[in-house]
Image (cartoon, rainbow, N blue to C red; front, side, top):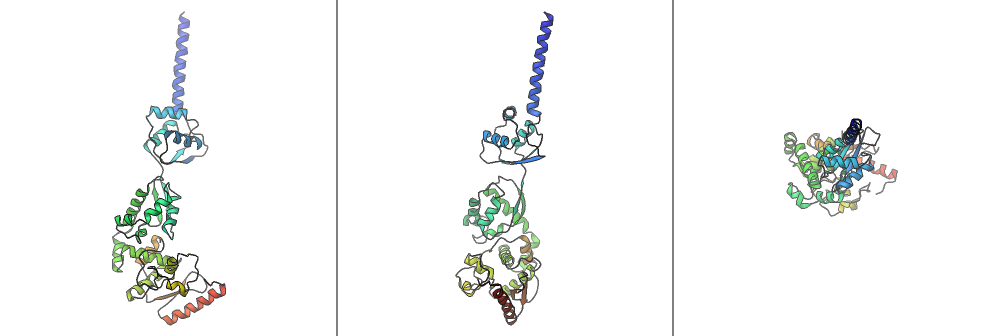
Length: 341
């Protein structure tokens, strides 16, 4: 009889031990099913708990959802925090639950590249974040939002500086705008503000001029020269006569050769008809072009024309006669290449 009792007791102990070990394995044992060292998984906003588990299962972060759900219940995890998460191979259900419960997501290295128009810039940004490109584009063109941050609708885009930023993948449009305002303020430090003031330019003026310089030359070593030329024209009250502003005004970026008809376009961005800077930038210039304006070269040039060798560099001139000679050489080169528009 005693042997039976001891045997039953042993069976109970084994069952309890097995159950305990099973529970331990389910909570602290390896739960992942992928073979890479790590895997990035996106949990969309407004995901339900079941939908989140579905994503984790599909991405092989989980081998099964039963043990994960049991662990989540034990740890009282039920509120989904969306985001971009990086999971390591061999993580346990306990590790995964802890990460998701506190929303320990990995930030995105957002590359904000230069673009011509707000909708293009919004598309570049939205392709790397959860943001809706249309919503962001509308925000970047909003008169109300522009006013809130101290800009006009035309120069609001000067607040969005191309650069690389770290931020949450599921950042909202409102949070993104706030972040760009913070980055803009950080960029415009006391030194840059003093340089802008010494040139009689506002921060937005500098970016607007930088956008023209960028459109004129892709050669960064030439940018300070071009900036100096346009500053000379502004000081002398001479219209900028910047061909890229005519292309922007025409809304046709396929134009390779500016003609007299383009100079008649009725637009505030026509710098042949209107003196001074246009009301806003014609693209989103990188910060090095803004710095080229702030550190513009000092010279007496007031004319420039692309070199006929199509190197991307320009010939600069102090007199109109010299400019006409440079322009004639370039026009002949265009004709030879068969470029008539």
